[in-house]
Length: 407
Ligand SMILES: *Cc1c(COP(=O)(O)O)cnc(C)c1O
Image (cartoon, rainbow, N blue to C red):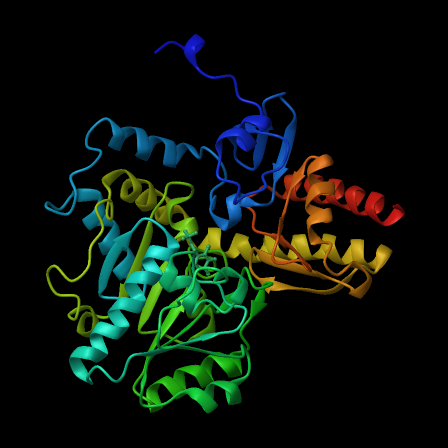
């Protein structure tokens, strides 16, 4: 097929041919390099959105491009009827770098969580009996968009209209140990939490809370699952946020930054727990796909370097300084929080509900940012974004805020 036969693309085509579950912005990006993106008209943007905490090394990082192209010239897919080299090398790397002994590969965060929830049930079905099947999650948590994961997630709006819901799921309040203590019981098979709630508004767990959840799980013989789909792979300044907290889960899920833009997810766990997923009990056609695993391997080699992780902390401080300067001028943020390069700026009461206005104004000033709910502006840039680009992009963001405040 020659290029002349390709359909011309405008934003209007989205409304014509796409299911209307998204509301993408007006510009259509066509190229990215590091933390810069260009649209169809050649306008340049600085990317602090990172494809929602995915593009950990920015766009088209040479090491990832070369891992992907080399793998693409050799072997694309075999399915799990056979093993493949990148999958096994990546699993080895992930187990060397974490508490885990075993890995299950999926294609997304939701699927990694689906595997975690199924494993937790199956493990206790086998060891404790079918009564121990309850999963406890936290209000305002997010765990994905499959039916099981929206039911576990703590945001009712994502379940609305999709009932009947999956049974055996309860919710407690985040950072409120008493509310977990009130519902955890010997029927609980697992407690799942994000160490830092992402979609829910960039809310870090307190040290006391995360330690308390671990202790309650131990007391009731429940598995502790950390959903590190958003917080994992260097974003917190540690490879995984659990390492920063010093609290180890029994099962951990990771996706988003794991592939740096190539779809991949994984569930990590200990050997004794993994045993419950015996042959044929779970699977995924693409899970462990050689191309995704080859990219992820190259990405982990870079992100796991101590100087890259240290850089995350330094760059996070630089972002926060800019946000504090903006706040000193306008007083529009009631809280600037997060962990590493997952940063949330919560709007003061007069601006509540308007986070999307900040995203749109930033885009008009050539900066891509995110929201985390209606009240929080979120930044999830590349972990290696250059300091000069942080300064340049935050100066543009400051102008966008000036303009919004001026009306
Ligand atoms: C994004 C996200 C998911 C879902 O990941 P998908 O790849 O979109 O399925 C799950 N959990 C958390 C914490 C997330 O941020």
